[in-house]
Image (tube, rainbow, N blue to C red; front, top):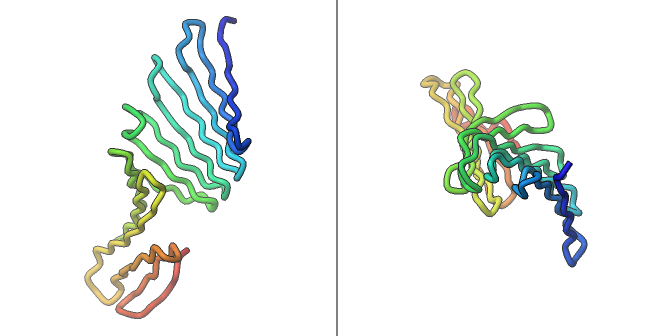
Length: 154
């Protein structure tokens, strides 16, 4: 086997990067492990980034597939600890994923810098219509039904 592996450790010892190359010296994989517990795994095809999986320290994951480059992917899937899956895409470095249940759609936008925004849209027209207000200060979505607060989601 003519493949090779390189390992790089950051000066502050907080990040370890392992990269795998095939016999023709084309990158086939990369794994970055951070001290705080997050792991980033990347897969390459024809020396181009093909997929990426981020496992956060809280065990939630964000997976990109069918990637055209570092900032664009046809498919993005975020899986929460309880197994709930948001699906969407990555465009220009911004991830947009959503989940729909009945008349309610919950959408999450994640900017390049990791800043998150959450939106709630309900197509119901009667007094069961839900609305949501996102607070960036404490990362909380407050849900109301018929103008009465029902739940804070963190």
